[in-house]
Image 1 (cartoon, rainbow, N blue to C red):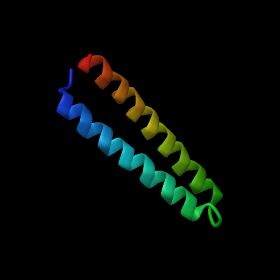
Image 2: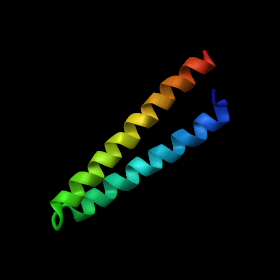
Image 3: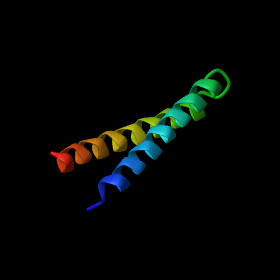
Image 4: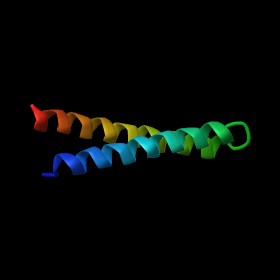
Length: 62
């Protein structure tokens, strides 16, 4: 089991990663739809993992 601090740090990393992928996808969506689609998939996956870690953090704190 990860410590609370490790969970918080990983949540922050994944949140930043999801935002970065999403921003990149938006920037190239007009020129490269396929790459934009791949980046959005990566953003969704990072966001999903982030949400799972947030749930784990809530369970550990209560």
